Length: 268
Image 1: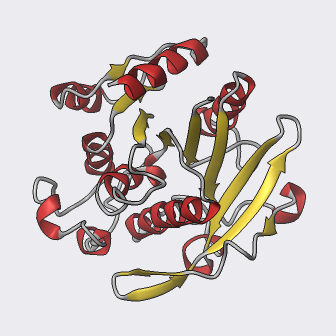
Image 2: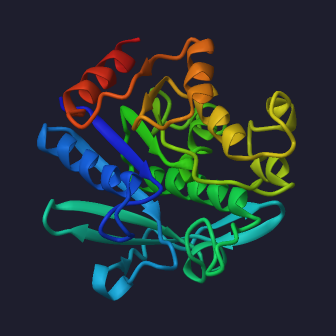
């Protein structure tokens, strides 16, 4: 039976401008689908996405849940579209406050949003709740981009007894640094959900920044992949010190290396 891979992406081309992250977000699911894997793909519905051009439409049966973050209700909206050239279906996590009315990590003036941490939490929980509703059980969850960095923690703690994720392996890709400021002074408090309590987060700085966020992802992943030559050596070394399998940057011809790594992770 073909393995099932859930790709949780920060960016996917053509919905946002081309970058190493958005191109990988588009190409990797396509390549794995062509190899016979069953895939699902998620990303945030950033405010700079043209819904009409991308032919996004809301999935009513999946929308409507409220996610409580830091004692505040936030409605979850799920939209879907297809990349025609690759026949890849993309699910979008949306919310008026966190995504629809805003750009990506930074506003029109280039200032990073002070609540980027809360946005990542909402995105993570929105994806996992939606996958549960789909009654789909991934063998592997592959997280790409800082926006997906909360997912590994929740899979291994808050959702570890859910049938959809009980036996799922998590892979995190390391990309070059893309956040410069902290992601909110209430991030730890906002993370608390089910089994995720403050004492689980004691090893991390109260001032969560990009590096702390990626360390959180690494600590809860079963494997880590370097993407590109300019990934932080400190973060790659951190993964190795935690004895987490690390795939060094395989370059442009990466598909076979990724597949081999997936199989290695699933066998461990």
